[in-house]
Length: 143
Image 1 (tube, rainbow, N blue to C red):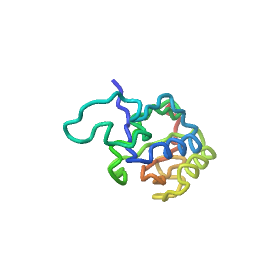
Image 2: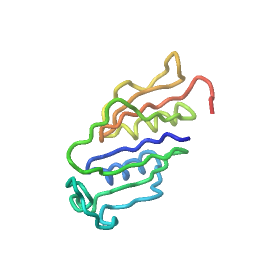
Image 3: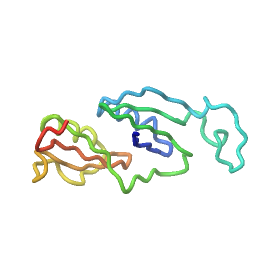
């Protein structure tokens, strides 16, 4: 069994994917736009016909060894990413700093990157899309 994150960017998905490709080396392995979906009658007024056809209906993204799914969703307003964070384990402090700075461009630092009692290096940052990230170099190699 796998549990995977599915992020809804509410109209900014393509921008987010481009950002994650540049900042984290993310690879988009699949991308489908709303215009690619076959026409379907919608009873609740929220089918593909009600959404900008150029917006992203579904994307699979690989960051390191992890797959994340993403979408523009129904493109109804500002995304609201609360109550979770994505965590990246870096192999060393230099790479942790690079990742932290890259993902934090245009975002907001929640906890500066530094040594803690539980990690050689740890920090928390919210990216420009509102997604919270934790970057960590563990005390011991757990991989």
